[in-house]
Image (cartoon, rainbow, N blue to C red):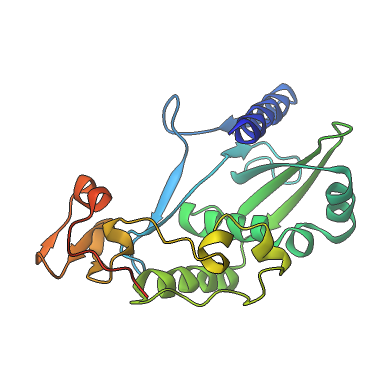
Length: 220
């Protein structure tokens, strides 16, 4: 939690620095709210993304709104980013920007990186690659519509990406999944971000989903 709070505070500082440099930054439609976009055509409203913000006044294209992605890095990661670029060194961050551009309707993004050790900044403009962005939405569609748990990226518990994943205990240590309707074999996604129970033959409220019921069976 403290790490999350630190990251959020750094994000606010980075946005403040952009504004101090004369750029216009919009962080949401209202105070305390982020810009958030939901994909409905393929995923039925079950795939959404929030932006750090949108920025106007980027020197290379001062009249074009850009999706804003703010990230802090340690020294090693920062140098790798400067050498290789965000697409190669931070593919997850690159993917976030691609989907953000696709769903928001903007076709440019500004990736603002900060070295946590030195406060040095680096920035990179990214263009929308519609094919890559749509391919990422297709992956989301496969996950949303799958009647079973999607296969993991590795069967090796020591694999780097698995080792540091929050779901490592679930995949490799026999920890049972959380008991909610969304992890039940009798429940499927429906349109408008809703969830349908085949046992009750009804759309479930959020409260019902959290509580689950006596007929709950873990999705396999």
